[in-house]
Length: 175
Image 1 (cartoon, rainbow, N blue to C red):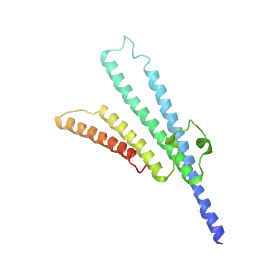
Image 2: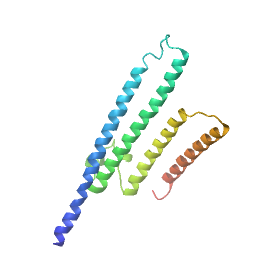
Image 3: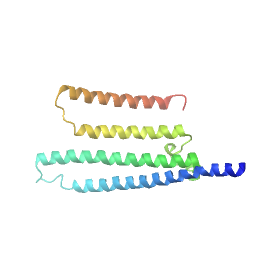
Image 4: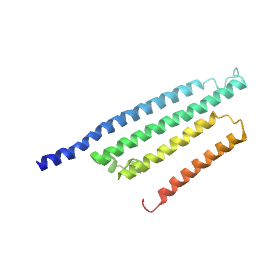
């Protein structure tokens, strides 16, 4: 009875495959969406050098393009989070990925040793998504008072501090 229960308990970890497959499919979907967005954005830039485009229209097209580029980067970063999450869950709960272990080209980013390791790697990518989102927000920001500019500068300072602290955490002897 105990042996059967332990076998059932051990095999219950396979339920994590649901999250692994779902995250992988979501990552593929995000890579696809970001790639399609990139293709459409580039196709809309064909007439950017056109002499028929007024200066105002060119400035508007440039601003829209920069916003789209930030959104595309955001999409790729989110897809990366999902991919790292999927690979990390698989390695932690199911099995080490033999293909990655023997490969010289395998990145250390994709090799997860512990749950804390997975959280740390995901936190870094989420931090980059937040930086990109802040940049996206900043592009459409209207500064109507000196306080707006001060708050914007404070946000940049806090982002810089967060990136610095995450860099220090990488250098700590615990890793």
